[in-house]
Image (cartoon, rainbow, N blue to C red; front, side, top):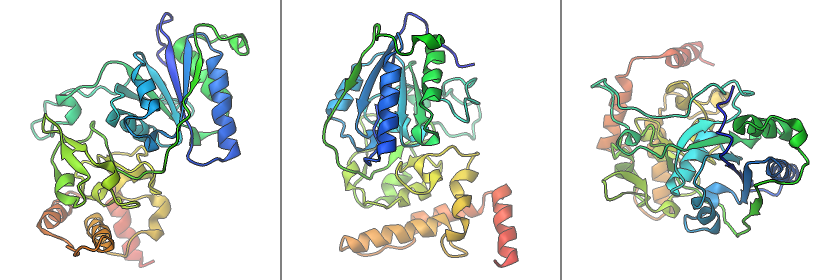
Length: 332
């Protein structure tokens, strides 16, 4: 069962529109907003695509006024949506909503606690905890059954009576923020994973990353990022960098089984880089391509990347490594 929000508390459902004008997507967004808004205790805010919105947008100003828990329904992976909000100062504890047909409903919101393992690096959220409120995130690509989403919202806030659907809105409303956006491409940092190692700021040569007053890494100039380039995500030791619009789910913020899911997207196994290539070599090549396009000199694998390659090579092999070795032996 999903842990219900106290009955006296309202919850805000945020419907983030897709980038395309696909009529089926628009229909699902509209139906979800209308039906969720008919539930007592629910307020609905409809905004453009979260990832494309600048921090000073009307949409984020509206969301900044929300004090309680949030349900975010968007067209990107839940983890990506959470950290897009976080970088725009809409913060809380992450919980995936209705994952695997609600198989994860028993999961508690993520709350990072300091590790007692001296070998375990400290995560940014251990040093800078997020507020106690919960941000529930759901990927609308998982299905077009609006009833499933609405039933989940009712259960979450303790309004399980199906007859409430279609009644006048009580204590809630629907707000739609209509503002122009343009498609963007920039990295988002998962601070539950990030150890503030600064590998990304050393690797990126386009001024995307910076540090705040507490010397914590941040995406300072997101629009300096080169469109389509995910190279920095490949060199991050903790797999903490997300590009929500990347075609590979592991880079776009999909759930992963430890680190294995990030190393390779099995659905694209035979479209991977050339045999013998590794993430570091791929990252170097992608960075060089962007440097050349910007009229600058290519760098290749520098000392920093050689060290990262060595670190990766010295790691013990896991099940996925063994699978790849077996495929190599088959010489497919």
